[in-house]
Each structure stands twice: as structure tokens, then as C-alpha cells.
Amino acid sequence: MTLSIPASPYFDDVHTERLDGYGTFYHTYEFSIPSNHEGAAMAVPKGTVIFTDLDGNTKCFVIKTVEEESSTDGLYKRVFAEDAAQDELMCRIIPPGSTQTEKDAEELLTFALTDTRWEVGITEHDPTVTRTHEFAEYESAWEAIMWISEQFSLEVQARVEVAGNQIVARYIDLRQTRGAFTGKVLQYKRDTSSIRRLGDGGLIFTAMYGLGADSGGYPINFSSEVWTTAGGDPVDK
Image (tube, rainbow, N blue to C red):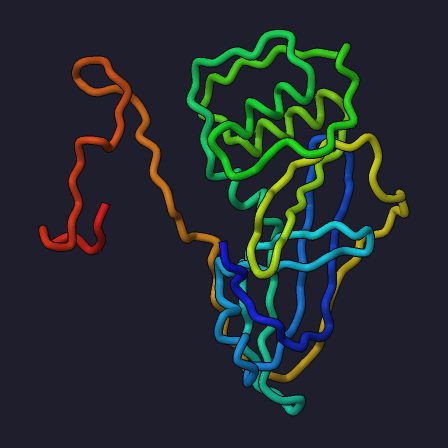
């Protein structure tokens, strides 16, 4: 995919990656850009942001909120973004009915990422340790990854590879230990007198899943539904 935001000056950026224990994940990025830069028009909810962290890993974020502010400091946008892997894989539902029996962490991660754009990356797991997991209640791929992280005491890391202005690979890593425990939570606060406009991409949905069965007992799907703009619908199926 093409990266959403061209090179732009930025300031007041805050990268927060909190490791609260196995089975948890909190990864955000905040920054400000001048509103009069050509790239500012691309800073919109659901846009993509790429940057390389201090460990040399390239991270991908999806913009959640954008605040446009006019103040004595000028015109700028304040952008808040969350990890793209979490945003995308929360929307990937694993069909119920599959049981993975006595699989190691890498095997379970491979299954969870089936039919997604993400691949298994670095897995620092013990192949002799296995678990059994039944996918029975429309679990998301991300929920499955968090379960794996908790069960095998591994920490999740999402990263991407970029060539030119294209994302060429996306990886989910399972690491033994990442970062150092400090007991502190980094927070960003600013007191200003300003005018703000908030754009929020949190309730934008891009997929539907049919639940239940039809009159013949078959799982519901949308293969027989026809939606066209020519037929009066707002979009084509």
C-alpha cells in the first residue's frame, strides 16, 4: 500500500509503548504537523503513519483522531494514532469450529494470521511447550494473539518493512522480554487556549460478518446479495 502522509515537519511527538505483562498491548504515537504543509491534508482518521523507533524497528500506525488547532503559535494538526496491527487484526474474525490441538506458540500464531496481511516474524518460543485452543465464539485474530502471548509468557511486537514508499511486509513477533520495567507511565498534556475540531475514525467499519444460519441450516454469508449504485444503492458491493 502507498504510505498515506508525505514527508512533513513534525513536533511534540510522543511514542508510548507500554508493556503491562503478557496478554496486554498498548502502543500509540502522537505528533503535531503544520496545517499549511501539503502533507497535512493526508492526516485524516484511518490514515497511515510510518516511523522507525529507537530500536531500529519500523512501526506502522493508523490515525484515530485529528485535532485542528488555531492558536497564537499558528495553525497545526495534533494527530493521535494506534498500532496498525491491532486495528486491522481486531477486524479479522476467525470462524468458529476449529480446534488447534497441542500446538506451540509459532504454530498457533501462524493459524491466527491465516488470510491476513500479517506474517509470523521472530518467535522466541520453546517448541516443546504446547497448548490446545478451541476457536468457538467468533474470536478475532488479535484476541487470539493476546491469548497466545499470555499462555506462553511472550510479548507481542508488530513491525513492518518498507521499500521506497511501499509497505512490503508486515510481521508479528513473539519475544521473550522487551524493554525495561520502570513503573512509570508516560503521559502527554498540554494547556492551551484554542479552537479545536476533532475527527474520529473509531467508529468507521470496513467489513461485515454474517452470524447464524439460514432456513436450511447453512452459515449466513453475503455471496448472494447484490448491491450496485446503478440499482440505487449508495455503493457497489
